[in-house]
Image 1: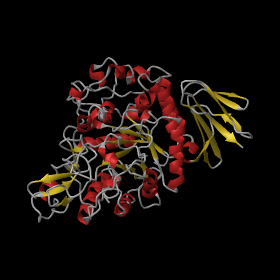
Image 2: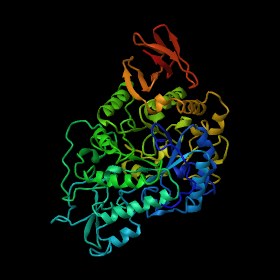
Image 3: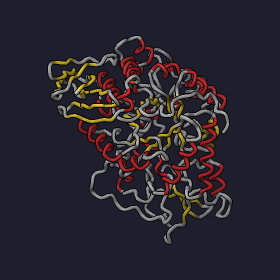
Image 4: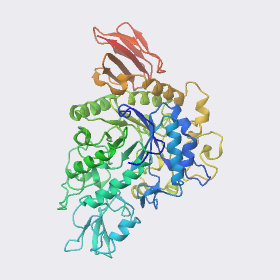
Length: 548
């Protein structure tokens, strides 16, 4: 194993209960004025990330790509795309992050490549070249139609006709994103080699894009219809025909677990590295449990159940308890926002969400059992931007407009300064517009206000790192009024009671009989203890040490 660039020693389980900040490189900070964020821009802002009180950050793709899906269509797994900088820029980013005590996780998109990848260009050239079977190819049916009924998440058939080979190839996403054939061990070897390349450069872990999509049914059987029962996975809108099928044969295949064991064996060669998988599955609880159980699969995974429009204390409790009942020794990673969904403050807070909601949601997230991901701008309380159709960049939004407006609204640039040109993100016109309401929440504005959303979230996240019960403890919910979420985290002798008011009205939560609750301080939330109950203001939170 080569020496890892800038690697720093750490406990091997730093990720367990850790807080990970997601950076979307195109929109974080632009160092050269071309309107697109880059690696040098990120490096310049790492002090800001370190001040948040997070353990590390996850970088969305920065690899060489034609950018049809903004980096999730990779044409060279081991090269930095020139719009983001150079490999030397990446090495500098790693070193600076490690100097600041931050871990660096990077996106790994193994399910598919760009159609501009040299592998695919060779694969499509003939049916008998050395890479002919590196992708999923199939003959047409007798009438010329695709080999089965599988659908693309981005609309239409998952099969694209290639006139050269006179066959269809599989694409679960855009037609320009052909799926790799993981039934080929040579393909697996090549993918693992690309992972090793980045581990040798010092990365501390991988975020694995669509981790349950790697394998397909070799018999190419049709997916059955979903029927009238409600979907619970939250990954696909009901207006998307992809939701009409039970995805029994095009993903979440049993062979996937064998590859995950190979991937875990690679990661285990690099101390203190980790993995988190993105799971969009028909039965997300069962799949997360299966993918994270034991010590030879993923370290952790996340699902989409808290990334939907459904907002209530009952939904959050049911989601967490549903997973807890299935996950066993597995480990979840919870998130409320990311680069693929409407920002949580707009999803759950409506048109004019209160700032207090932005504070209590981060505290609630950070109190669930598992690790957490915070998406850039979430710490500022950013809302979803309204990007007009003529300015859309996202092919998903362009296809499904106006019922689904796509992902551009959550990908607009970070507002660093209220008065700065392009909100301090760039000296040139940004690739997406910055709404005026984001300028009002800019970093330089919030830095100066002690009780701003930013400073409140900083206080909580720093405080959370000192609470072993919140990072690694068990979880048990207790009954509370309709708009309240109450839970106990327990680790060794520590028991922490956490209560959250998720409504705009004050409420009181009764302390269970026989409990002695001592309020904890330092987290930044104010609530009153009155005899046998806790009184919380609108969107308030309470943390207390419990003795029974």
